[in-house]
Image (cartoon, rainbow, N blue to C red; front, top):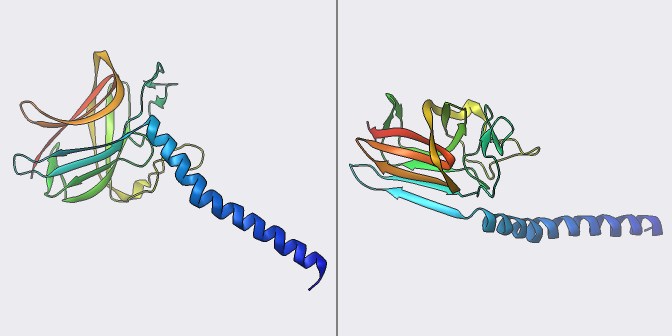
Length: 190
């Protein structure tokens, strides 16, 4: 084997080794660091014959403009509805959401915020991370199972960490709250 070929193989081996080190050590470390800033949360609802669960990561406002044309989450663009991994929504039974049926199953939850209303997207595909290269939402819209629109309310009181919760009022709602915005999506059994 020639000396040049040995050098090339050593360099390629070093590059491959560094790449593997970055993937198996660096990537998990970076993911752990982002989890500190936006901790994981799982919420569940097990009443009225429903068995629901949402998994998401909770970013903080940190003095930033959140929902605005030039905000952290711009109007009119798909948002992963949280931070880090794509938010998931799971139901053990078929649901009625604004007169539309969402079959039992596990979905990723995406939104398109607007000033007065939001599109709520239940997508059948599971994604490793919520954004792709270029920091744009990684959702593939051809896998949408259900898309509904819900009004956005200004609450007058800022919520520091993004929050998803189930609220029972005159009916059951999936509520999304962050900064001074709240969106409530009515949910019932089929």
